[in-house]
Every structure is written in structure tokens, then in C-alpha cells.
Length: 535
Image (cartoon, rainbow, N blue to C red):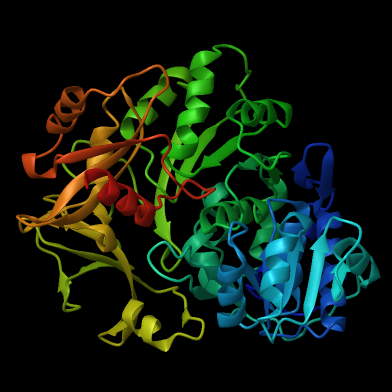
């Protein structure tokens, strides 16, 4: 008698693998794995991890570039009830030691290129007993070779304890504080961030795991390109959505982001769905198309998706000009809320995205009261399928996951205004809101306007202390190649779209705007640059 399947991500993946075993699940350059191969390799690794003492509820770090090993480790953890933990591979030893210790990592799978920082951090983490390194030859004492460990495992793996409530750990980026591990039950992440399993089939969320076997074999074998690092939620979630639909997940076969090479891969691997994170990725991709018209046959590309950062309207317009038949998909969400969705602003004024009201969303004021009147402002909140909290941090958990009228609501931090059509107009992140002379200014709105200036390559907007206004709005700008920065032109572009108090009072020009590998803004860096530049 077969075991009853759960919403554990390993169970769902195994159902898909059994349904379309010979489809290609993963491709990186010439290397590819079928669904059957990826599933079997994940089982062997899971067996080997278990033999090394990794148990249910243990936390396992994944410090890798996008690769087959990333997915193998992720599903191996899910198969035995361990929690896969994304590790930012840009962290240095002190940051790694803090993260590994606070999350009580029992095992770590990492790339050889990160050896030096891992070596300096590991001695400070008493719980970290198992280390597997991908690549390299000579290994430090106590570190095993990933390929050898995987080969030692058994494909015969049984885990009767699998559950809807097994935990998937998503680490926040730490841009507004130290990184935290968000604990998502598997069923909750499937429903809140992965479309419930039916999103690519135009179906509602699945009512049972076995439903996947009914429609996945009949869906088109599309190819999805994860251009952003899987260590970030947006890219990992999009990859999982495609894997649960029987698609091929394509990754970059180079560690760096080269726009022309990205388009080469799109053509070579027949990519149908390309996802990015904001303008930092969109701009070089669009510029490559503009500079090399007709170079790439992109007739198979259907969707250009964005999530995790703002994709400005002017860049969307430029993309439509060079790829008029490609659908642009914008979405918003967070590590704590999952994917909320959203759409373009259309004709409404202010903000950068509109969200349709629905039962699992609400606007909550600072006293945690629901508001619904047109014109009211508050913080967007979500209920229903939610995380259970931050790992080892009950204080922060209580601040973000709030019980109101007997239900848990996730306070997203996104400030919204309710318009006359009852839509939620997203203004920006409340944590980076600027208060200047009593007026609230959301950096994302100012950045959107500033990008309309032809000389602006990239921009971040911050508030710095001001004796008269409390805070003043300052833009940190990098200049587009071949352009010179003209302050009058910049101010005119901003004033055409913004009230006067939102227009930056100072502008600091720098060589390059600092962002994460996935394009997320580093506002702490921008504030330092702005403060020093204005001084």
C-alpha cells in the first residue's frame, strides 16, 4: 500500500517526477538532468545526509550559485524533513558565523569558491557538524566532497514522517537589520508563494497533492530561466513553480550576469519564461536588445517576469518597443508574506503597483485596526497561509505575525492607500519612508520619477537628517554611459511627476549604485553615500 502524499515539497516533486520522468528538469549549459535523475540524486543525498546525523527539523545551509547541486540539496532536505536554508554567498565570515549560529545549522553544503569565508566562520558554530563542499580537490579536515557523499547514498528512501507542516526556511536579506530565518510550513509556502500548484494551468490551487499527476503530463514542457540567484526567495519560488508544473529550469552557466550571454542562453535553450529582479537586471538586458537589433531570435520567449524589486514604467515601455509580443508580468511579495500579486498602476495616481482587494488581504493602521475607507492609508497585511514566525526570535515574530480577531495577520511593511475603486495602491516600504517637514515621501515613487531623466542610469533615494525639515530627500545617482548629468534636467523630470516636497533637495553622483546580486537596493549604503556627499 502506497504512502499517503502530503504537501511536503518533496512529495509534490516526486509526484511530478513520476508523471513526467523523462522530461528535462534542469539545464546548465551542456549539463542536464531529467526529472527521474534529479529525484534519484536528491534521494541519494537525503539518505547520505541522514547517515551523517541530519534529522527531521535540523537546519541545513545551502551556500551555492544556481546549480543542480542547489536543487538536489533543497529536495534532499525536504525528503527527510530537514529545513533547507538559503545562505547569501556574498556574506563574509562574521556574517556567516552569525547566521549559522542563530539558525543552529547542523549541516552546510557550499561551493569551493566560498572556502575561505566558511573556514573562518565554522569554528564559531558549535552545532555545525556536517560540511559538504561542491568542487575542489584537497579539502580541509572535517569537510566531505559533495559528489562522493551523494554517490554513497541509497535511492531507496522512506520517510513516513513527512508532513504539510515540515519547515522550509527562508532567510531575509538583512538590509534593514540582521538576517532572520522565516519559517514556512510546506503547505503554506505552496499556497502563499507557489500558486497552489495550478497557476500555469489556469486552475485554482490543488485540493490534494495527487491532482498534480492529473494535469502536469498534459501541460506544455516550457523552459523557465532563473536569472536571479536561487538564494533569493523570488528566484527560488519561481523555480519551484516551474518544477511543480513539469517545466525545465535553466540557469546561467557563468557566475556573472552578462546581458548578451543571457540572451544567448534564451535562444540556445529555447527559454519561454525569463524572470528578473527589478531595473538593475532589466536595464542591461534591454540595452543589449537596443544595441543589437535582430541579433537574437526570441520568438519562443512568451513571458518577461519581474518580482522582488521595482521594474520602472519607462523600462517596461522600452522593453515593449523591442519585444512587442512578449508579456510583461509584475508581481510583489516578501519573505514573510509570500507572493501577493499585483498589477500595473494603470491610470491611478501615485504608488507603483495596485493590488486588488481579496479576503486574505487587508489594510491595517498603526494600532492594528482594519481600515477600508477610500483615501485611508495603512500597512498591507495578509492572513491565511502564513509562516509560523522567525526562527529563535519570538520578539520579532510577535511584531510581524500579529493576531487580530483570532486570526494571524502578517504585517508586510508595505504602505498602501485605498483608492476610490477600493484598490490598494502600494506606496512603498514603510521602513524606508522619509518624513520631511511632516510629509511622507516613499523612495520608490521618487526613484520611478527620477529614472525618467535620460541621464539617469540607476538611482536610490534616501532621507538624511536636516535641521529645518527633520529629513531631506536626497538622490544617489549613477549616470548613463555617454551622458552627462544636468541638475536642471533631472529636476524637471522629477517635478513633472512629483509634488515639490518629494523632489530631491540634493543629488549625489556616484560611479555605480550598490545592489545585491538579485538587484535589491542597498539603502544603508545609499544613506552613507548621501550623507558624506552632501556634507
